[in-house]
Length: 441
Image (cartoon, rainbow, N blue to C red):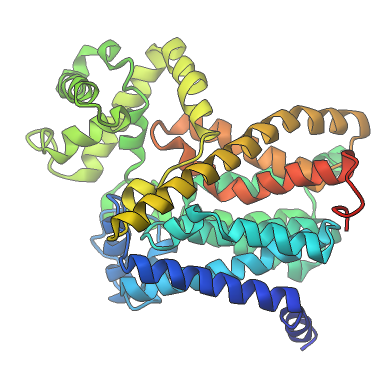
C-alpha cells in the first residue's frame, strides 16, 4: 500500500500529468497522419514466435528469436494494432521513469519537465513505437534500470529489491539475449567498490539468478527443438556477417559458402545495397538449400565458417571492428526510410525535422564520447562508483561487445542508451559548467 501511495503521489504531480497529456497528444497526432504499422524484415520472426506462445506449444520452433518481445505481442493477442497501442502506452510510462530519474539526479522539476518533454518530441521514439521491433520495449526496460541506478537500489542490499532487479534484467535477456552481460557488469562494478577478496561473492549475486535462468533456459528450449544450445539460431549466421570484407580469405573447405558470399557482396556494392546483409541475400535466394535445408544446421555451419575465417584473419577482423562496427555504434540509426507518411507534404516535413533532430542527437553522442575520458579520470582519482560511471561503463561495454559480435545496423544497438547519454551530458553541464541563474532552477 505504501508503494501504491507513492505511485499515486508521483502521478498526481502537475508536471507528470502534463507530460502524459502532451505525450499522448503527440503520439495521437502523428499516428492519425501515419495510420500504419511499420513492419521491417525482422518483424515476421517475432510475429511467428508469438503464435507459438499463443498456442502454448513451443515444440518444433526453429529458434530464430528469444521469447521476450513475442510474449509482449502475445499479450496483445497476436494483433499488431494492439501491440503498437501497447508500445505507445509503455512510451508514456517511459517518460515517467525518465522524469523520476532526473529528479533523483537533482535536476529541478522545471528542468526535468523540459528535458523529458523535448526528448518525447524526438521522432525516433515514435518511429520505433509504430514498428514491430524490440527497441521500444528495450528502451522501457532500460529506463527502469537507469531509475534503479539513480535510486541506488544496488547499494541498499534489500533482498526484495535485488530480486526485483534480477527479474527485470532476466526479462531484458529474454527480450534481447545480447544484454546477458549487463547484470555481470553491475555485479562487477559494485564488487570493485572497496574491493577485497572476501567481497568477490556478495549478496548482489542475486541479480545474476534470473538472467542466467532466462539465458540458459531458453537455450535449452532451442536445444530440445533444434539440437543446438544457443539463445537464437541466428547466432551462426550473424557471426558469418563479420567476414564480409575478407571473405576471400576463408578456408577452401568452405568454398560452397565463400563463392556465393563474394558474389552477393559484389552485387550489393554494385547496386548500392547494404553490404553487411550480403550473406542474407544469399540465404534468401536459397543458394544454400542444396547443402542444408534446415536453418539451424545451416546457421551452425555458417558459424563454424565465420569463427575459422575470423581466427585466420584477425588483423582484418579487428580493423573492421574498430573502423566500422565500433564507429557505427555512435551514429544515429535512421528508421525514417521504413516510416513513410501517405501525405507527401507531411512526410517531407517529418523528414526535414528528423534530420535536424538526428544532428542534435549526434552532437550529444559525440560530447558523451568525449566525457568518457573525463569520468574515467574522476574514477581513477576518487575511486567512487557514480551513476555517471555506471552509465558510461554500460554504454562503452555495449559499443565494444556489439562491434565484436555483429556487423550491420550497429547504430541500432546504441538507440536504447540515447536518453542516458543525453542525461550524462546534461549532468556534466549542471555539475561542472556555470549556468545563468535563470537556467539553474
